[in-house]
Structure formats: C-alpha cells, structure tokens
Amino acid sequence: QVQLVESGGGLVHAGGSLTLSCVASGGTFRRNGMGWFRQAPGKEREFVAVISWSATSTYYGDSVKGRFTISRDNAMNTVYLQMNSLRFEDTAVYYCAAHNSRRARVIQPYEYNYWGRGTQVTVSS
Image (cartoon, rainbow, N blue to C red; front, side):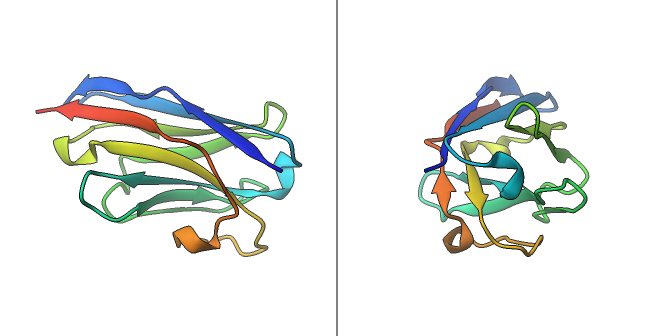
C-alpha cells in the first residue's frame, strides 16, 4: 500500500513561487507514475501535471503550462511541483497521486491508485 504525504503549501503573493513535495512510502516508488491535481472550493478536481516513472515524460494542464514544473527523485521517493508566477486562480488544495499504468499521459483522477491528503496553496491577489 503506497502512502503519500504532501508538504510545502502555504500563503504566497501573486507572482511568487512555491515548491510542493510529496514523499512516498510503502511501495516501489520508481514503478509508479506520479501526478499532481488540485481542487478549489466548489470545483472539480483538476489535473495539474504528471511525470512518468522514469522521469522521461511529463505532461501539464493547460492552465499551468510554462509556469509549473514537475520532477522526481527516485532515490528519495519524492516528487516535486515547482510553481512559479502564481496567480490568484491557482489557489486550491493540491494533491499528490500515484498510478500503476504503463502509459505516461495519465491525466484523469480515476486512473490513479493512491492519493495523499493534500496541501493548501493560497495565492493572495
């Protein structure tokens, strides 16, 4: 059973940066593709980014392309989300998730097998 714990959320001014981390335990991290999602109050969970198990493939949601970067360190069982040029509309709870698919472009929440509890990111305008 894979367990995921996010950290790094907080309050930041618009235009600022944050880096989220997600540490995995209880499984074989390097075999899982890893993704980030977010959910704002009253909205559906939104795909943010995904990285393949080998880190050779990454995909991003349209709203974060060019501003966010996903990366992973398999030796540390950790996936990161570097967020730059933050906007008010980036405010949400950010979730880390792991999937077992062999495909790289896994962007739907139902395709993920494990989820963290989330970390709050608040961007002040």
